[in-house]
Image 1 (cartoon, each protein chain N blue to C red):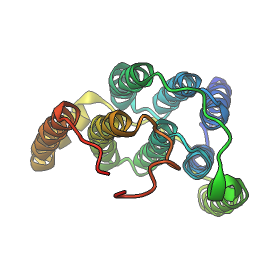
Image 2: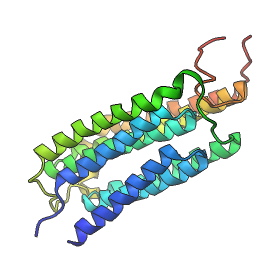
Image 3: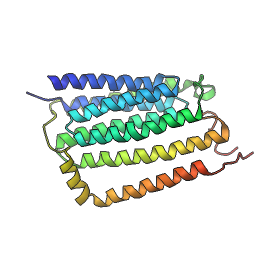
Image 4: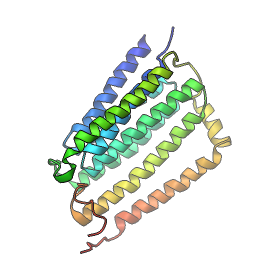
Length: 168
Length: 102
């Protein structure tokens, strides 16, 4: 009973944060709402017995990614977004029904197929199980991610360092 | 004593993914579009963890790990590109940067 109550609290917080992200005019409020969503999602991960992933999620997203977002928003000093001009004005009437259809499909599948299945109390999310899998069977992908991170870092430094010139 | 149905998690994930799709299609600010992409990646992570719990299989958790690494790399490179475009054109509106070369 406690678990399902917590689930609904976190779910409502996550969905509210997600709605705030896409409706707010000011990007800073969008970023702060996204942080709310990410913390609520960390709560959902704990309810799914994925404790390690929940902690890593908070550390990576709230600690690194959202700080980067807020840093860039404040660095660029972006004005509040005005009404979208031109051809993109009608995107609302295409995008929202498209997303609604997508949601109905996904929700129908989830509701039909997994109605009678419940969250079980497993040790699958512990550091021990994840560490064993990560450093035995999946050690090559794990090492390759380090190369990916180095490439991303070099790319970011290069892009922000180079003097770009306007091509007229 | 029964726990939470897996379908609840999947439906929450579907809601978040659809919100991300709406954000990408209707917002014109490149940074907000990036945040919507993050929202979609997180929805997918929630699905991975739900199925990992259901199947009692550790592969889902490993995959979430990899998705997080990719998201971090993507944000670093993407925000660097946005900063470079802002320096060049003084805007992050995708309407103003729709031409590849002008």
